[in-house]
Image (cartoon, rainbow, N blue to C red):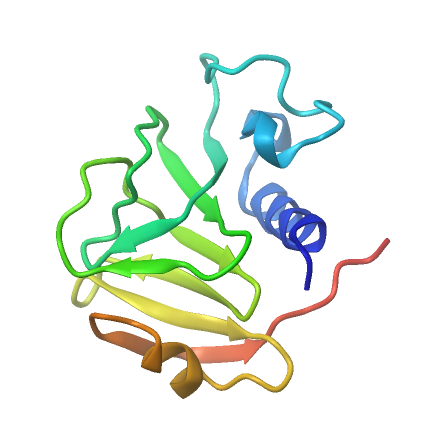
Length: 147
C-alpha cells in the first residue's frame, strides 16, 4: 500500500469515527491537494488530526507536538520504534505500509496490532519493535480503500 492509499484509509477511518467529519484536520504534508488542510496550524474545533510520523515510543508518543484531542499518525516507510521517551503528541493510531496499530490505555497501556497487510502477520510486525506489541483480539487484514 502506498502513502496515498494509507492516507485515504486513515481519512475514511477517521471520518467514520467522528460525529462531525468536518472536524478532521489533515497535515499539509499528507494532503497534496490541500483540500483538508487550509493552513499549517490546527484550528479551533478540530477533533482529530492526521500527521506524518517517523517514530513512536512505548507510551504512545511521537516526536511531533500537536495540540488536539485525538491524533493519528501515518508513516511513509517503516516506523522507528524508539526504546526511549518521546515528548510529542500521544497517538491513538499509526498507519504504516504493513500494519495499523492502536495505542490502547485499557486494560494496560500498550500498542496493539489491529490490521496487517496481505502476506504480513502480527508476529512479523512485532519482530520489528523495540518494545512489546500485542496482537489485538480483533486483528484483521487491512482493507483496500474504494477509489
